[in-house]
Amino acid sequence: MADEGNGLFATALAQFNRGADLIELPDSIRSILSQPKNEIIVNFPVLMNTGEYQVFRGYRIQHSNIMGPYKGGVRFHQAVDLDEVKALASWMTWKSALCEIPFGGAKGGIAFSPRDVEPEELERIVRRFTHALGANIGPDHDIPAPDLGSNPQAMVWMMDTYANSTGATERQNVKRIVTGKTLETGGSPGRDKATGQGVMFCLQHWADETGFDLSSARAVIQGWGNVGGATGRILQVHGARVVAASDHLGAIADEDGIDAFDLTDWVGEHGTVSGFPNADWIEPADLWGVDADMVIPAALENQITADNAGQIKAKVVVEAANGPTTLEAEAILADRGIEVLPDILVNAGGVIVSYFEWLQNRSAQTWNLNDVDHKLRDILWKASDSICEIREELDIASRRDAAYAIALRRLKVVYEQRGIFP
Ligand code: NAD
Image (cartoon, rainbow, N blue to C red; front, side, top):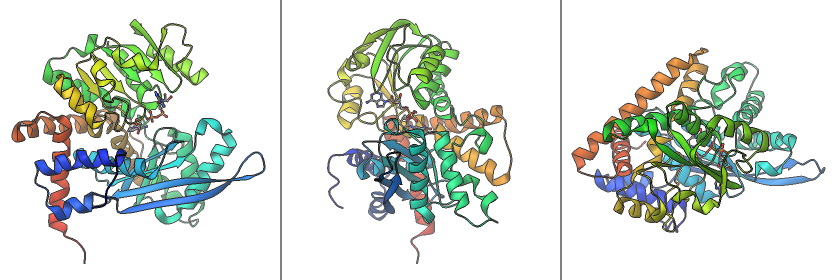
């Protein structure tokens, strides 16, 4: 196989190979799953408010569709590149397989900062990207969703653009081309908080298993966006407290607890946690060393590294973000007895409720929030149970390795039964 360098996809492959070794995944299946099926790159022009055209680069990486349609978010960030999106796409495949969601794995992105464009420019970028992807996406083929930097409004623009590019008789039938839409346009109750809600369910399961008292626990949260903010609010409702939080512009701390709802209002108004009046400003690099029971990265990848893993005082790192822990940092945490709840389990709430949204759109129904939350909990607790079981069976400590082993076993069985056509 080609040298994958030392970027994020190399990390993803190293994790995959550890799981593959554990279950003795045959080389043929290993080589199929070691790379995405399709790597789509589109360069598309957008009319900017200056009257000039600017060319943007977008990606859609389709990793696997052996278990169902390609599925995964669309990231808007200046650092988006092929290597990153390949890693993120592969993690979607394992996530769905682990949680027995009948989807494959994909991810997309556009390399730009959504904070640096005007709202009407943003809309044109999203619509032009959707148009450029054309028939590479489809309601039963490849279904995007929000990710870092994108949001429900962007999903509505994607849906509307796609719908208007299909024939008139199909238009009502393609709502499920994207998930994570607003409620009014066909979104699911609970999708906005789904990833944070899923983090909470996974934490509850782990706390029960290990005797950890979640109701009085202190959390450090990196990133106060969709995932970090929802996680913080839900934790607070359950009695835990957020003692430090950060985002791309700064970090704040208060050992008595930062009110997660007030902080969300502040970020809604000011676009950042910085300046929040009811907490102390701290250096972002000091976030990891804040005295706490849980550390919850909910921003970008490669945040917990060999340089800062030694500072963490918590009992558990909860990977709400995708790929937040480097391989070196994970080894340091393991040596120090700090548990890692892996991303492909912990943040799967997003894709699970996306699946619910897709089902609701397919049958023209709307479920209620209680049903959504209960079904989400059942799936994540079942996946958490299976991680406990396979750790015993294989006599391994790493919950990440256990999660990969489960996902890869399921994929292996399907490949063995279906074979390769023709
Ligand atoms: P978001 O855009 O809503 O929020 C991202 C947050 O991270 C913002 O507060 C931003 O300021 C902060 N941030 C950005 N760069 C940072 C930096 N260098 N240091 C500290 N903070 C920084 O994104 P999101 O949807 O909450 O996604 C966060 C993570 O969760 C990503 O890894 C994403 O892939 C993952 N995830 C998201 C979903 C979902 O449903 N949105 C589902 C599964 C996983």
